Image 1 (cartoon, helix red, strand yellow):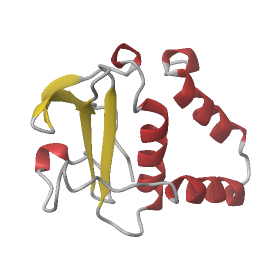
Image 2: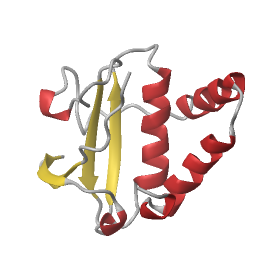
Image 3: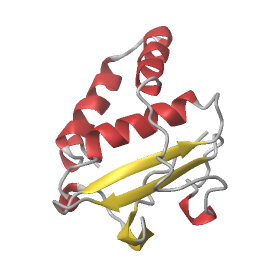
Image 4: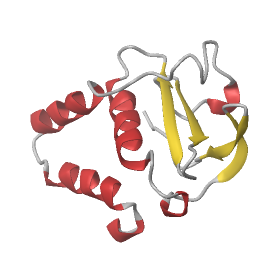
Length: 130
């Protein structure tokens, strides 16, 4: 995929990361994003979280929900069970900030499942690897 295939806000964040060359700067940027992480609200889900919401291959035990908004867009919610999972928290914050509220047709490929007691979307591309 090229950057033009991503929603504009996500492409902008990815471009920011691409310009970071030092390991220390990258860590600082990840920590900054991780500090913005907001855990899934209890009205969406409470532990133990359902396995179908688990992000495959994520060592931080991350879970994701995509819930429909009244305007037809999606709101993303994340849980990261590992309190040391800064990379997972950073990715969750980035995806929330850049994809929540974006038109559903600008989101990446998805499949239908249930969420928030109604129909919504789970995104298989939201895989956090180690």
